Image 1 (cartoon, rainbow over the protein chains, first blue to last red):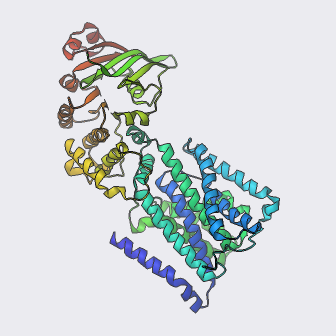
Image 2 (cartoon, rainbow over the protein chains, first blue to last red):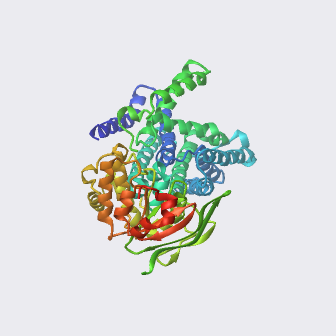
Image 3 (cartoon, each protein chain N blue to C red):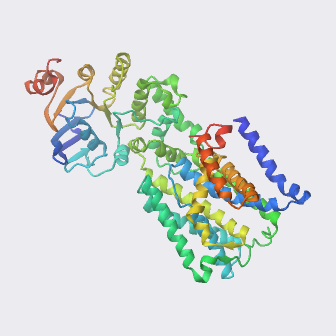
Length: 310
Length: 249
């Protein structure tokens, strides 16, 4: 327990110290790289809530990344660039889409659930391709970064980095509280033993749906951040490869663990980065590496430090 | 007879050509321990599943505490006070014994759409959960993961989870299944201590247990109740002897 807190403290100190260090060493590129890791960590944390703790193998989680990003992009396109308006709307829109997809898909389970979440996300992906006004398959440039009344300037890479870090840490705390609350106990119980959970009087459907919507909303926030990070929004954000990447981050890091999705995201993007420097056929190397990691780290990277919660 | 707590009329369930429940009438009075026995394949599990709400009957009605619950799903029935244990041990292996029971306590204390406070250290859940564990004799094992408990202890834990929902009717599906003699004796003692305080339906193969615990016994053969009476009369019943008990009674 204590070791956990020490490790968290070290990790946070490192992340806080990174921008001044990078600037001092003249390697500002790393601010950008780690910021991307932080933003995608939020998406992975949200997926862990339903995949790790809820046992809902959603193969379409990138949908909410896309909905969040397009919400920001489309509002900026029409001149509404106030972040106070954009970000809550991105979160709300993602929650709504998650509610619609979840209401249908959570009635199924197993392979059907995987396929139906994938199918819905593919629909959104093709919708993105067909939106000619918003760039179609070329995607759209973000007209202006989200404005926060001069409070923070997301155009400043360091300020934006700290915003992403803060929101990532808040996401960790939020999910940690949720999974250990009464709600979280029911969610985990339904994953562990559905029949028993029904027999003591819970209808798992509603708890799973609520978790699905929460996860979608949180991933929508990641999408809003991502749009500001890349300044460019493409339908590729909603592709099945992106959904697969998110799943892999969670599994590699350790399902149903607090730090797992963050570790997984950092590890996957770091390996990707290193391999890209070596060869343009980096995926040929990454694939087998991923297979090996699943075989040798059954509990994920977090499992090396501590036992997953459930 | 007093008003029945549970009243089953004309319950019928057909699987293809097999009529697993064939017009079952069945009554359980408040406070009694009612055993259901029958040879393998008599339709006991099908019957229990229809009582618990895991299986919808083709026809017939199930009334519980005066209300028609025939169409209600299992969670709704559980909230009305119909608690069950499973024939095949069904606990949360990754949770401690205490948290298994705490979850059942949680089920009877209003909705669980509470997202922030830590449930694992909530005294309003853990305190009653500890009491129930003591009641079933698992007081010293509360911190052990349910998956690491001995088989007999897991069966006790199942009973604890059912009790923790403060049920009006306990539906125990073969609580002695797979137990050694010593474990069985402990379970019989536990059930004897629950008798009178609770209304119990006991499905069981262990005749020793059935005749020691039951106030009434219903005998199910080929989906029909061929006798429903006091243990002495069931023991003396010719049809029952022929169909089931054979020489052992």
